[in-house]
Length: 256
Image (tube, rainbow, N blue to C red):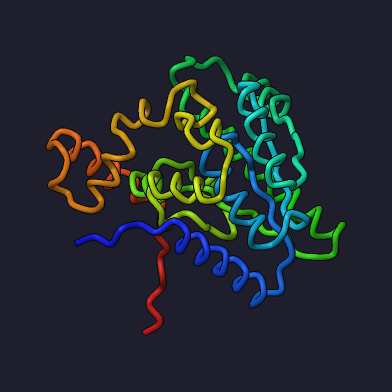
């Protein structure tokens, strides 16, 4: 029988995990991309509890984004008391697109996936730039935190070279339901914690894009026979087709 999830116990364990890692490696602070969604809100709460608000810097990275995302991010930073930087990358994205036009004319449908994935790659480059900058300014090492949950990772719902890149990953072993329970324990603002998850990139919810619900993914991971066969096949295909995102095949020469 599966053990009932204890949000208080798990939250305390994650906080200890963060503190132990920082102490062991003589680290100082964290940079978190605050999207206005539940995952980054929970990660912000965990780091604030673990390191103190003075060692947390949140960053909003709008790129043709909804104003609601920025206002929800501010709800999180206001509640936990850490500074929130707004770094608008819309101009950078548009400059990239303008340069692309020099290569020729392309159909918009052929560019859609490239455009969607460019945004998280620009965002992660920005977060690492800021981490290095604040490390130099404040004389202590800042890490960039990941904000992906277990369900997203299982089906490969992330961008290579984008949100897959980070230095520490505090919620990667928690399903969406578990993340919400931790968020409830941490008092993450309700407008953030219970909003429908979306990537802020494609004007679709995560579940619309995936074609399956997060609770179905969680059920499938626990027992592959617990969901409808059509749903199970979709989840299996997503998992199998995205395995390449986790490992870089590297040729090793024979030393014999």
